[in-house]
Image (cartoon, rainbow, N blue to C red):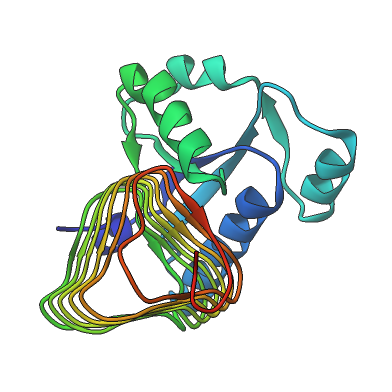
Length: 223
């Protein structure tokens, strides 16, 4: 699968949301562009948000960016504009994607220069990999997967659409994270386990057995 990094001119990008994840994505884009030297990969038009919070808007403006307006403005953009879903919660990210998919805009795949996607890995559009994220080999990443700072995804794993792996979390080999699952900060999933669709693994938990869909587990071992 490909990303827009291969283009010879900057591509227009709109970030959906104004919260912390959206602003982190803005930082990832800046890092990608800085690595490109004279030719930047992305031109951020701004952010869209139906219910922006004043404190978030102030932080967006401090970044030198702007709020374009509500999400429906995506319908007015040229068809070659890309979007990035700055929505941290996997289930909300799935709902947002469902709401805007009809606009026909492709999702950017954004990999920080200090992240690593290893050999024999494939990913669908919308991947966000923050600085320090590591993916080893033979890993499949679905649509709008978010890999946060310094997380590790081991060999032979499958992460389905809208999965979030939070900072410092580690996914061992031969695991399956089903759609919209979330693994909390500094949590560990041991080898050959499944985290079910919509399940949440709490921060610093250690998953030693399969997690049912929709479950919330925490602790060591996670229950």
